[in-house]
Amino acid sequence: MAYSARLGTERHTFADLKAVMACASPRRSGDELAGLAADSDERRVAARRVLADLPLRTFLDDLLIPYEQDEVTRLIVDSHNADAFAPVAAMTVGEFRNWLLSYDATPAALCALAPGLTPEMVAAVSKLMRNQDLISVAGKCQVVTAFRSTLGLPGRLASRLQPNHPTDDPAGIAASTLDGLLYGIGDAVIGINPATDSVPACTTLLEMLDAVRQRFDIPTQSCVLTHVTTSLRAMERGAPLDLVFQSVAGSQAANKGFGIDLALLAEAHSAALDLKRGTVGDNVMYFETGQGAALSADAHHDVDQQTMEVRAYAVARAFRPLLVNTVVGFIGPEYLFDAKQIIRAGLEDHFCGKLLGLPMGVDVCYTNHAEADQDDMDVLMNLLTVAGVNFLIAVPGADDVMLNYQSLAFHDIVSLRHQHHRPPAPEFEAWLRRMGMTDADGRVVPLSPSSAPVRRLLEG
Image (cartoon, rainbow, N blue to C red; front, side):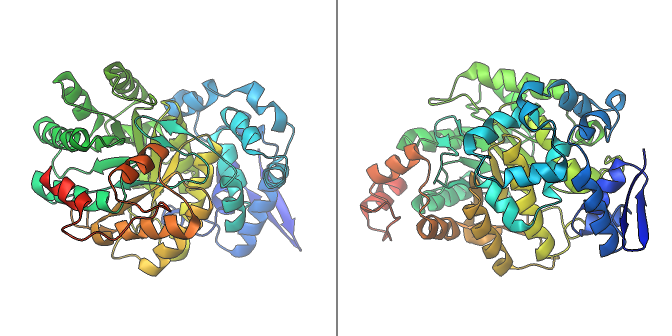
């Protein structure tokens, strides 16, 4: 089937739906690298005109990656909920955009709709939206998950405390962890990216984090972001594992490059559930994604990088995760060249994940060879907070000394919570109050080395 639109005297024709989707995307370096992007703004507008007039049902019939070739496609098709889709089934992509921006698209309606949407539908409608549209709709999507803390409640902002260390030194990680806790960070998870991926190293870090958590009765969860097979072996050896982590992508081939498939994820999900370590919920998975992952593995099937990113959310959705985050600027300028592209991608990823029913967070970040700086990250972190992001990631001083990239600092989360009146998860908020680390208005208070909360943490 050929797709075409006339602009003025010129007719623009697109060979297939993949070409329409790629050319309708905002400009980004990854699609240009792959040879998929529109070669002019006029062609980009033409593709969006074609896309706006397409029935949403098109994406159920014209599959971007064949069903027979890809288990992610099979998951998307086989798990599609026709009853949930029914309220929007007669709409075009353009009509769906208008409905999403209307008063009829309430939080309850969006929650009920999520199982009826495919990643391709969601990616398509995002391509017709301005940044403000993405923010407005994402702000209406509410996705609540729980383990030891309850995340995603309206009007709250959670945070991942990321105390990475270049040699996995437990003392250095513990120091960064305590520093973050004193800023009120860590209600989403205390999550370490290990420098070495081994069962003994993973177990050592899990035991250290669990000891800190138990010593101070902290209502949060810990995670060592190791490969899923390492987590499985650690669980078999009795390690105190809360969450299973894995990076995922939008095609079977890309996931094979990560050393995973859906069966392996299902095995890990079942094993973590069997541990029954949660107190207020049983969401036990943590997934990370990022635009460009499939292209970098040459596993994108000539599909644009943003649509491939949203397909990864179908993988995550199948396992009821506690947390999902896009590491938006981490993969590098080959895929998101500058601040404009990074900011747009962060808003897209958050919108698409939330619309599909995922508890989305964002690592607001960039690499040092990208055309971006911390001022740009300030813009994105504020936009995402307004958009109702479930959690953001923070590292000591905004500089990750192990992964060598720039993220947010602990004090950025404090600032966002005060400025936007977004307290942390309720269980964690109550803990901070019990520890004497917040004032009567819930604000993190300046603490001297001799203050009681600091002494309790250091002496412990």
